[in-house]
Amino acid sequence: MMSTEMAENITEMAEMNTENVDMTTEMAENVPEVAENNQVAETNEDKLARLATEINTIKIQTQAVIQNATLEIGRRLIQAKAAVPHGCWGQWLKEKVDYSERTAQMLISTFERFGSGQQKLFGQAADPELVAQLSRSQMFALMSIKNEDECIAFMEEHKEDLPGMSKRELEQAIKERDQAKTDIEAWRSRCNDLTDTAEKAAQRAEKLKAELAKLKADTAAGGEEVEKLKAENENLQKSLDLEKQNASNSYDDAVEAQRRLAEERAKYEEQIKALKEAKDNAENEEMKRLQTETAVRAGRIKDLEREVEELRKMPYAKPAPEKSQEEKDFARHFENCKAEFTQLINTMTAINKNQDKYREATRKLLGIMSQLIG
Image 1 (cartoon, helix red, strand yellow):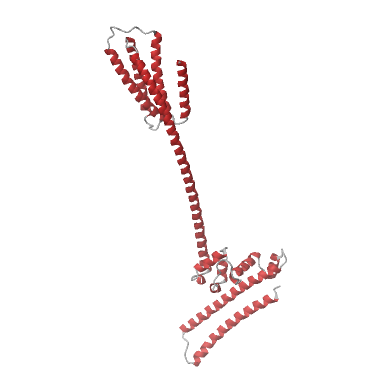
Image 2: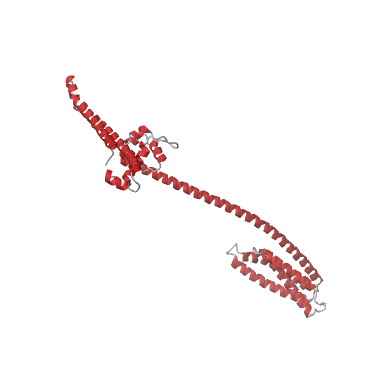
C-alpha cells in the first residue's frame, strides 16, 4: 500500500491540475459574457486564437504536473528502497506500485539528475530554468547519456532548441553526439598509434645510425689492414721484379714467357666471358671480383707481351747456359705463386663479412712461408 504522505501529495497535485483546468475553462466561459456586456461580438478568428491559447496553457500545465510527478515518484522510490528489507525490493515494486526494477531505477536516476536540487562540489550543475521546461520523455531521453557532466554539457550546447525538440529529434541529436564522440575517440586512438609508430621509427633510426657509425669504424680499421697487406704485396712484387731482372734471358725464358702469356690470355678470355654473363646484376659481388681480376690480368698480359717482344728481339745465337729442370720448375712455381697471391689479396678485399678472419689466415700463411724459406 502507498504511504499516507505519498497519497496525499498525489491527490494534491491532481487537485491543483483540476483547479487550473477549471479556472481556464471558467475564463473561457466568461469571455462571451464580457463581450456581451461590452456589446462587442467575438469574431471567429478571435475565438480560434483564444482556444489555441487555452490548449497550450493546459498543455504546459499538464507537462509541469507530469514532470513534477515523475520527479516526486523518483524521490519517494529512493525513500522506499532504503526502507524495504534487503532482497525484497523487486517483489515490493511489483506488489505495491506495479513497477519493474528497470522502470523504478529510471525514475530514481531521473530524480537524482534533474530533481534533487543538491549543489555539486565538482562539475557543472544543470540549469534549473532549462530543467523546468523539459517533459518527462525529454528527461528520459537525456538519461541515455550516462555521464552526468556530459549530459549537462549537451543540454547547455542545445539550450536554445532543447525545450522545443520532440523525443525523436532529441534521440537523433544524442545519437549524433555519441557517434561524434566515438569518431573522436577513434581518431585519438589512431593518433596515439601513429605517435608510437613514429617513436619506434625514431628509435630504429638511432639504432641504425649507431650501427652505421660502427660499420664505418670497422671499415676504416679493415682498410688499414688491407693497405698494410697491399704494402707487403708491393714489397714482394719488388723482390720478384729484382729476381726477374737477375734471371737469364735465355731462349727457355722466352718460351716459358710465351706459355704463360698464352695461359694468361686464356684465363683473361674466360673472365671476360664470365664478366659478360654477370653484368645483368650490377650489384653482384662476383662481378666486382671478376672486374678487378680482369683489370689486373689485362695489365699482366700487357707486361708479358712486352717481355715476350723484348725476348724476341734478343739474339739467341749465344744462349745462356741451359737451366736445370729444377730451376725451370722453380721459375714456373714462382710466377704461379705471384699470380695466385695477387688474386688472394683482391678476393679478400672484396669480402664483406668476416674479413678479419681471412686477413689473419693470410698473415699466418706468410709467416709459415717465411719460416720455411729461412
